[in-house]
Amino acid sequence: MINTTAWNRIRYGLYAPIYDLVADRVFRRARQLALDAVDWQPGMRVLLVGAGTGLDLPWLPRDIEVHATDLSPRMVRRMQARAERLGLDAQCRVMNAEALAYPDAHFDVVIMHLILAVMPHPERGLAEAKRVLRPGGQLCVMDKFQCDERPAGPLRRLLNVATSAVATDITRQARPLLEGGGFAIVLDRPVMLGSLFRALLAHPTEADARTAGSAQ
Image (tube, rainbow, N blue to C red):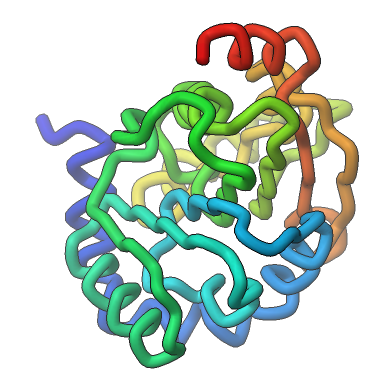
């Protein structure tokens, strides 16, 4: 039986030719709002995880070092072509978000847009994001989340069986995921469809930052 990671690689490869038609205009404003919250500084080293066809790239500053990954080779090819059209020097690589091939404490900012709800094990993806972030680094998340105050009910869990197979998990909760993954949330705002889609900015907790710093 095919595993979730392999299925994600297949289905997003199939989605690649039409992905922009759906995801560009629909999520454009939400992406901008999420990225506007980042405290950008010249020369930052930035990682986009699960970046798809690179729809975040137009909204990034031009004085940063950009690295971007996606599970689907077809998505990565389209992302690289977009970066070249924009004149952006971006290193785009095929990579599993749950096993990033980067050193510890390597990035100033990690961006995870519309990926935590599709990963088979989002806690592993967040652990990797924390590992590659420098002490004091910023995690920028934008995704759909179930209300933090209550878990998904039976009807939503039943519907999730179908949505997870073709698109996304609709039962995941932002704060339990991020705070359980060792992040302190400094901004949490709704950006689309009421509060269904939220943008969050977070930092590794102080204890985690000290541990990462002492390991260098």
